[in-house]
Length: 179
Image 1 (cartoon, one colour):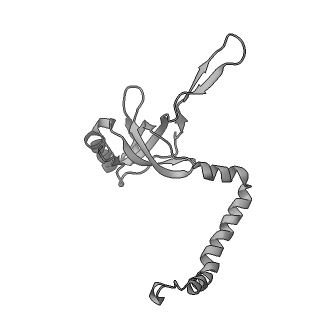
Image 2: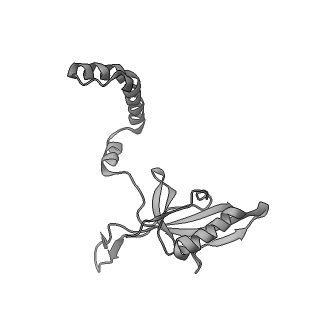
Image 3: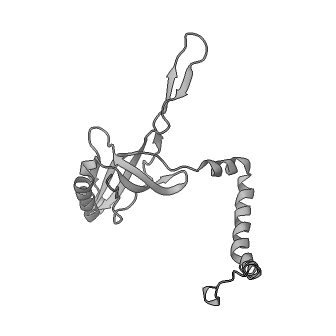
């Protein structure tokens, strides 16, 4: 298995303009002669389409074109890129899907910049894990945020002395240089 390439660090991330998350349907629906239709999940993982837009300088556009053709085989290869999701900006595995028969569209703009648009196909978007979801569903968000702030204060302001006492009692206190 080959290592996945990354979006070039020198290139900017997509802008908010036109950005959207478009999950593909993972269900199958069967209309019945009588009664409600039956619906079931067909796939546990489906790709998501994300329309993207970049504003690139002349040099960045030259870098993008060469990277696209030479490093990701004209858009056929998957690559790692940080994209906006429900949990914030997070790493995604994507490839160029494009639209209208073209993998991307590049239009020159004023000031020597290029506007590049495309649609990325993302394998699996990062989401909250089930444990985190359960906590969020059970707790009041405002109270949860307050508790996190209090916990941070306790851990970083209140515990260093207590931690030392506990380690002393257990005979596990490290040397003074490490404190």
